[in-house]
Structure formats: structure tokens, C-alpha cells
Amino acid sequence: MHLRNIACSVAVALVVAACGSRGRPKQGDASSSAGSVSPAASAAPICTDGQRAIRKRAVAASRSCTTDEDCDCVDLPQAERMHRVPPLCGIVASRATAASLREENARLTAGGCVPPELCPPAPCRSACFSGGGAHGMCGEKTRCNEITDLATALIARIDRSCRQDADCDQYPAGLVKDCGGAASRNAIAPLLQLAKEHRELNCKFAVSCAPRFNRPARCSGGTCSLP
Image (cartoon, rainbow, N blue to C red; front, side, top):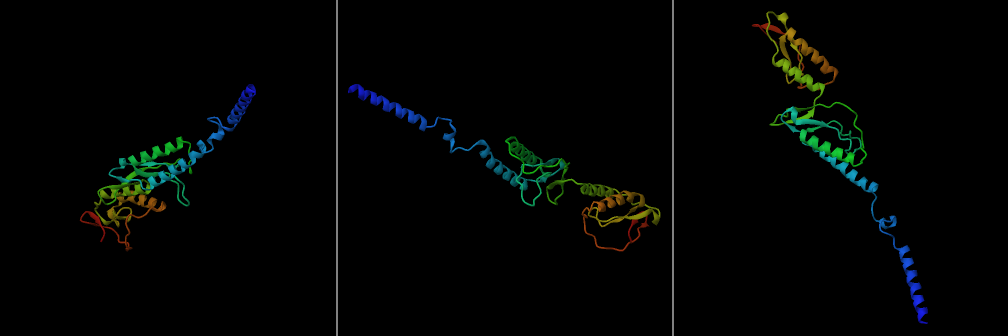
């Protein structure tokens, strides 16, 4: 009787042990991680949040500058894509801000985030433009900007000397904040070429000038002028 009780106790213990080992998942088993998130699933919100954050930073980026060296261009294909809003390619910002945004974009790429948009390889040149205050504003340097700079330099040192009326001519208005004037005919030739390119590129005029009648330039006291 005693031996029978011992045998029964042993049998019960074996059954319980067997059931327990089958009912309790081992550590690391797939069923034990039902509440965990796979790496692929956890990456999605990280990428989405990061891409949204980089767009917000880019939109509010500092563009204050003093010289052209303070500015830089950066492509941000990882930035969140917005409906009917161009991708953030060739964004101009202060050099320090652009470097920080570039690092953040690279971090998302290295983390496996898929860029919402790809930036085509295109040159982007930045420059510091006068804003009328103590500091300028970083912007993209275009051919239109270059035409304005060239025209400004030419007009600043343009030759206005003459001997007779035939030596003088008018230079075009609106290339700079100047509504035109008179100068030596030979000196005006480069300005006329810039004005032609300015029109072909549909560049904006630097100043709005009132219509005026064509007044021939004259030589007065050895200097070209408009009557």
C-alpha cells in the first residue's frame, strides 16, 4: 500500500512536469514575444517622426548671413513629403544649419529609412543677399542674380565721357535699382547684352520704372546725359 502511494505520487509529478514544460514557452520563443515589436515594425514610426521633424527644421531654418561664405545648399530627400509641395532639394540655409540638416538626413538614411523623394543631381549655389538690415539673407544664386551683380558693377564705373552727341546712348532701366541713364556708347554695349539675357530668362526687374518717351542722350560739357 505504501509503495503504491509512492508510485502514484511519482506519476502525478511526472505528468505535471510534462504539462508545465509544454504549456510554458521557453525564453526567446516566438510566442513569448507576442507583445514585442519587430525591428521592421518599430522602424516605421521612427522614420516617419524623423522625416516630419527634418521638414519642420528645414522650413524654420536660419538663413541669416553677412557674407556668401555664411550660406550653403543642402538636399533633404528624407524630409516628409507634402501634397502639392515641392521636395526639399537644394534648400539654402546658413552654413551651420545646412550642416546639421545634412547630418540628420544621413542618419535617417543610415537607419534604413526610405526617402519619400529623390533629389535629382543639380547644381545649387548659395549667396548672401542684402535684406536692407544689419544682416543679409541666404538664397540661391541664379543667373538672374549674376546679371544684376554684373550690371551693378558696370554702371558703378561706366564711362560717361564724350565729345559729341553721337558718342552717347541710353543704358537700359531695371537691371539694377536704376531707371536708366546715359553713358558712352561703347561702354553701354555690355549692358545691352545683359538686358537681352535678362528678358530671355524672364528675370524680375530690380525696380519698377514709369514709362517715358525715348529721349536721345546728349553730350553736355564732355559728359553724356539725358535732357
